[in-house]
Amino acid sequence: MRIAQVAPLFEAVPPKLYGGTERVVAHLTDALVDQGHEVTLFAAGETQTKARLVATRAQPLRLDSGRLNSDLASHLAMIHEVRRQVDAFDVIHFHVDLIHFPFFEGTPERTLTTLHGRLDIDDLREVYARWPSYPLVSISRSQRTPLPEANWYATVQHGILPDQYRFSPQAQGGYLAFLGRISPEKRPDRAIEIAKEAGVPLKIAAKVDAADRMYFDTRIRPMLDHPLIEFVGEIGDAQKSAFLGGARALLFPIDWPEPFGLVMIEAMACGTPVIAWRCGSVPEVVQHGISGLIVDDIAGAVKAVHGITGLSRARVRRAFDERFTAQAMAKRYARLYWQLVHARRLRESEVA
Image (cartoon, rainbow, N blue to C red; front, side, top):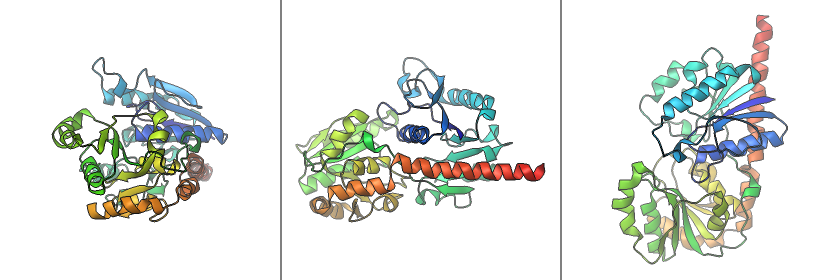
């Protein structure tokens, strides 16, 4: 099948450091190529892929800090290029929220749109009602909650390439891990409080966006001055296996309706169980008592820190292999692509 994947331009595919959507697109694209599909990836320059790459921007937006730039203009230019090549594809799979809606409303049946972000945002309901024909994919059932009437086509959970994450049968470091982004909704303050209460070291590997700099400086930085807490900073894929694999557990103390939480399955791939708040997609991703422990408060999290060693790290990795590989994700998407193509061809034959 001839498939186009359209990625955001904020990061390379895969990202050099932080970047969930671009990482998923990278794993999906390579898995589809491995399964024999003809894939074209529209993405930023510096991308590494097995597919045919159409780089509509020389550098990812986040790395292009030497000059003023426009993410809107960059994405519009990419959408224009996708439209120019539209006849070359059986299906165009968008990962750029809804920016393409006005440009493909004559042929929405040729598209699939995976929504990667939160949907409890003002104005979204009106927009999805304005363009109701686009088939939409959610990345968890929880993600759909604010927009139950949208044109949901399927739910496909994320997957990653297993070989890129090294299984660690033992937590050599014995510390707790926090990986991702410093922001109020990710609650690194909770992670620090849990570690202090439990008396277990915590390593924080996270980026600090400009929008969250004040939160980091005023709320988090003062909490780092403690012998149990180590701020590592932002890390890339090359460091993840050692960082996650060496941890006793990953702390995922979120305070928002997380649509998926890629870091949870990255930890599972390393054999590291997850201690996560009962929020958003967490109950759909973490199997309580198997791949981690789901908690409701600080006291429960502290108790989980001391009980998590009772979980088998081999079973955690097996839970990942059973549910969250890129190959499984690609097969699920390929079935959706074939369904779209079959339905379109059926309609075309009826018109003829």
